Length: 325
Image (tube, rainbow, N blue to C red):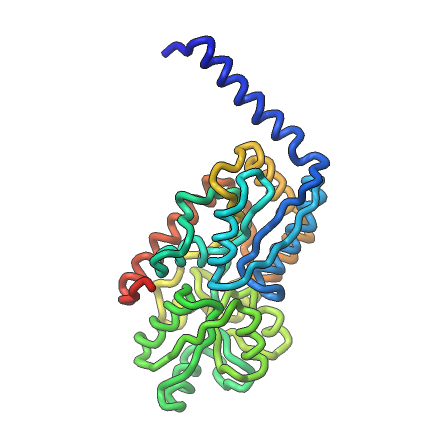
């Protein structure tokens, strides 16, 4: 099919505009790039964002700031991203909960990832873990189940957000072992960890990176990890599958998202810059130490990872009988 001269010139103008944006928009840009984080300072997501922001600043040649907008399991930050201009100055670093889970458990979350966001780049996969406080004597899942039974079969388990993957895991464990485990939701992992350190709650489920330092310090004890293999950061901790609980092998993810309509040139450059940062030895070392399996994902790869995880948890949520709130 032939294009008219007018359409050809129009197409050329668009290509020229995008190319010019990619060449100059990030260079000496006085407006910083803002990375939204849906959880408070002190948690795993915040630590990851700050590490990457520092390195991306040098790679991109512009200021990169972390903007914490905690609350509702990342929902507030996601709504902020939807409202932000699609100009390449606002991104959202998040994990599976906000993108894959929230839209399934909340009737009106205020955003639709498929309609409002565009994947920019993935940085890693990770796993969740079950940990107990120092005053809880269990050293593995079987001992934990026995301990709960000694408490009359009922116990609280901290989770970083309501209607999250940790909450559905609590439901599964409760059903699997015929216990009355009660999920106690917090506004992020940091306050949950504080209560675990203070022995205000005997157990918690969160991303493995939230527990690593406390595990090493002997202040908490991780007794099981999800996923299909043991984690390099804590190789002595068995998976749930090894301890008889299967169905939680799919790996959650971390990725950057931007408002729909963000220029493709920015997405391409930011993804390329992130790939370079993830190759830096000190960055990989720190992210692995946080319990992440580091691996750059181009936008399409992140989209595929998101879709696969969403499908896996759609079945789990449906089978749990959970009704969107």
